[in-house]
Image (cartoon, rainbow, N blue to C red; front, top):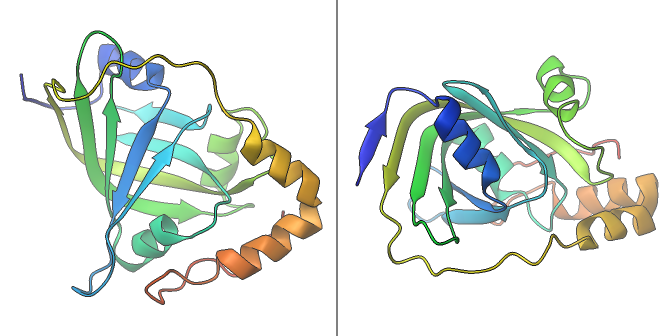
Length: 184
C-alpha cells in the first residue's frame, strides 16, 4: 500500500466521510512552539471538491488549530479505519479560517446539522493526498457519538458560549492570537 492520489475521487470521498473520527495536526512556526493534534467527529466534515475540504469547527477548551492556521496555514488531516479493513489517509494542505458572516462559513455550516457550539469553519486547499496500510491501528467498535459538546453549549447558552470563547479561545498556549470575541 502507500499511494499518492491526484485528487479526492468519489470512492475516496465515500471512505473519508464514513470515518466517524479524524485528526487535525498543526504547528506554529517557532521551534519552541507546541505541535497540536486534535480529534474531530460528529457530522462536521465535507469534501467540497477533489482538492478542497472543510469542517465546522466547534468551540473547545483551546484554539491551537485556528491560531496555527492563522499564523502559517500548514495542516495535515488524518483519517483511519478502526474497522476490519485497515487504512490511513492523510490530507496535507493550507487551511484558512472563516467566521460567521463569511460566505465560506455559511456554505459549509449549511451542509451539516445545526450545532450550538459552532465557532468557525476551516477550509483546506489540499496539496497532497496519500494513504498507507494502517496495519498498526486496532480494530475497534463504534458505540455512538458523545452528546456532551452539545449539552454543554446548550447549558451555557449563547451568552455563556461567548464568555467561554473569550476566556478559552482568545490566545493559543504559545501566545498566538486565536479568536477575538465571537457571537455564540
